[in-house]
Image (cartoon, rainbow, N blue to C red; front, top):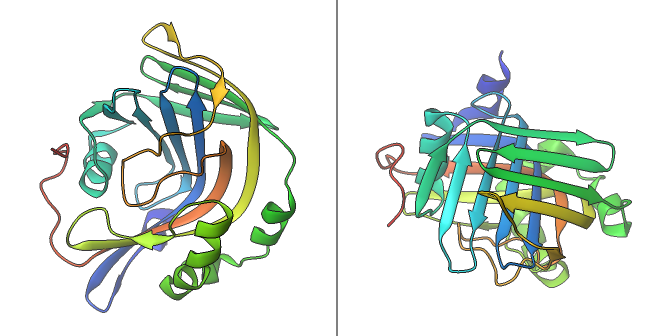
Amino acid sequence: MSAGEAAGRIVRGRRRLTFDGWIAAVGTGSGTRLVVGHWPRSPFGPFSDVMLERADGHRILFAPTARTAGYIADVYHFDEVRTVPVDVRGRGPVWEVAAGDLRLRFTVGRRGALGLALRAVPRSLARRPGWAALVSGPARLLVGVRTRGSSRPGQRQWYAARDLHVITSAAASFEGADLGPLAPVAPPVRFGFASAPATPALVRVVSTVERTAAPAAPGRPAP
């Protein structure tokens, strides 16, 4: 069985796709906020994507293929979709991201008490919607995020964090302009039902999307 087949299955007539990897959320002094997804295991094989929201609210998706761009744009909300090479590399505490005209380099700190607790969550448990429901309250209280909900009609989503590192420094540029120093992820990003933590962080996560109805046409940016 391939990684893609293992990450997608039919449950009670509904299509579930599971993405296992990392999400990094970074705010900048310019007001631009960045959310990086790095997915070593997904229904589409290994890939990475970047979601960017400018200070004026304009939301851009950077994805490596038409297939991944179309799927993500059907799940989340964007004003613009760019299909460009996306390269994400982590070398110890330092991560580097390149996506079209976007460059990001950030450093993570040591794992704290919350990260240690999250590492104890088995992957098999993290995939279950009941677990997302159980930790929903603590997640909103501790880090200010929702673990389950829906970004569009005909689907539901749930997340389970399995590790967490605070991001301690970052440098980013977009279309040749420096985006400024590391800052809180504020105001909250508006790609889907769940925002990112206000404190910049790198989170190991299992994300599951369940389709309960036929999706919209692939690649259609949200209004």
